[in-house]
Length: 390
Image 1 (spheres, rainbow, N blue to C red):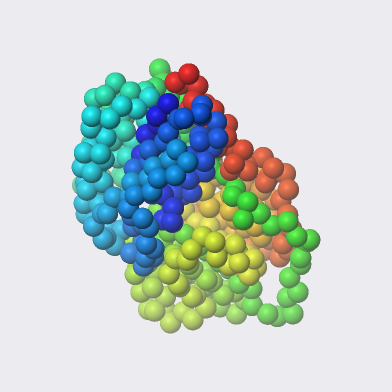
Image 2: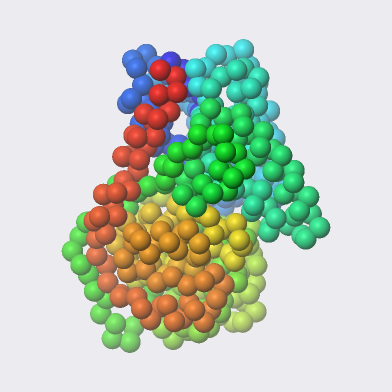
């Protein structure tokens, strides 16, 4: 068997899709028949301009080949991302033409990698397994002006319909996506294999309670600083309210980083420290040095359906979680994650009220870790993929 995996991000790049594709490729290699091969076409690390990591353009080992496409540098803006994807799509087209595959797997948060997989699938009449990590037409309405947003929504809705209808099977990373897709594409077959927890993030130590004694607590956020996270709407206000109690450490990059920095500077806020993205191997130490882990999604209707991958890392760390989320993410936290304070997105008053319910203690979330181990989830997903071509 020969499988093609299309993933715009892949290690050593920093992105949820990168970690997911890496784990899945390992699981597939373990479960595929002997002499099977997997070809991954991805990009050179480009998630953040401030994170530079060299990676080989081509790798081949143990039945796995990896092609990394060099894309133009960008600052996470829309135009830069369009140019980067155009180069990726053109290169993928040239690499796969005249090749035969038994199945195509495409994972996508912003739809276009999935659409590229659909195009190749239709052209070559190859089964397609899609892994959908976001509802992009739903999201794009909020990311652009009132004039442009609805137009782009219609464009991407058309692309989405072409993509979903081209797939043999569709996996959704959030149960919150199911009503949306079932209503629009009722004839499609769906599965739900969520994101999961990698072993290095699991806290297995003893319960540790923070001794306060009037010392400031450290609140850590690590991840994208974009419009979707809306940190520029909430962090400055919370920092002012907790100037004598909390220090916020923001680690990451994104399209709204400069706006967040400007808001902090304008209010002369000193208890927020912002640093560039770091290697994933160093993140666990950052989490363990924190007293509280912070998560926030902007107040957009589209985000009521998502399940942030960051939640799995946070919960596995054993740290208290302070989360500004709504919809399915809130339901998920309420059901599965202990010692998490949830508030409505961009609502400073609710955030302050919820904060007081947190217990400043680090302790293992054993049941959660057992249920959402990434290796286990990806092993089950790999078997589901292989069933399509057996």
